[in-house]
Amino acid sequence: MKTLCILYFHNVTCSGLDGPKVTYFEKQIKLLKEYFKIVDLDTVAERILSKSMPKQPEVAITFDDGFYSNYAYVEPILRKERIKATVFISTSHIYEKRVKRYNLFDYWEGKCSLKDIEQPYPNSLGNRVSTSEYKDHYMSEEELMEIEKGNLKVESHGHEHIKVFTAPLELIDVWSDRVAIEKYGRYVWLKKIYGENRVRKYRYLPVFKFASFHKTNITKPLIYELELIIDLYKKGRNIKDIQKSIEIKGYSESMEEAKKRIYNDLVNSKERLESLLNKKIIHLAWPFGEYSSISIETAKKAGYLALYTTKKKAITENSSIYEIERISVPKKDIELFIKLLKMIAWN
Image (tube, rainbow, N blue to C red):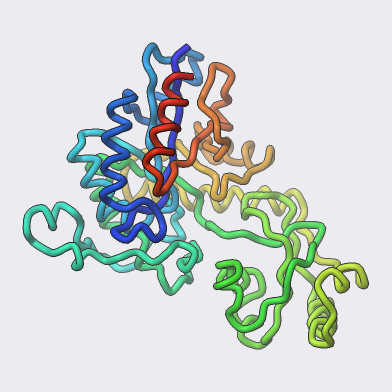
């Protein structure tokens, strides 16, 4: 049995601050071509369903989230190297302005300098949601249509790419001012959970354990308990003592509410991309790689045919079409990347 695997990236930048540098990414692509036959996700899905592994090592290349750098750097390099990849888009990220900005093709043709190509912020600052002040560092609809015509095909990453509080409520910190951006990169998640007005009203907000939006045990803390937690925190009580001293309760959604929420999110993403790109969207990668048996069944009901995880394994004859494995790519260490390729190819 020869190896079949899927690799996943996120961002590619000139600085290497939040993902591989452009020059390093080019080396990675050339090495992948050397060690593997590059295939698309339809081929991967067909192999899983037919339980037919390849006669030579094969790899599919994917990207998550939909950063502007995928349009600016990734798609031009893929087209130059004559290989195809897939990007999973969280539709709440899509940049609202109807623009098509500079990319490497413009640079190669002398239409702009590298400095003219916008430099993405670290994705931790983007907070991955539609209200982010850094939303211009995701692709616009025009840019999505452009890469779809080229060598970077678009599929779904759901609509919301956020985390929420889960049951039982487990207090992990108390947010003050904007420390959550530096400590968690989750300020916008808190605005989504608590609401804009409450975040502006309170200097302190309790932060509970997070899980993906596509989990089923979402909990919203009760307001009077927030007041109690804040009061204890102001009096100098530490987080563990607060957790032990009071029974923190919240409103937990029912299973039917969870199914409806997840279904609406997945259908929203699917329908928007299908309308924009005039094609069927059948592949879905779970945000943060988090999902449940309920979310799998809900995704199937919404019309997705292949579901992708972040389980760091190669694909085998026993892989499930609803829990397809993917391997993350080292961002900076080329020797580690080569070691990973050899390990996969010679498995």
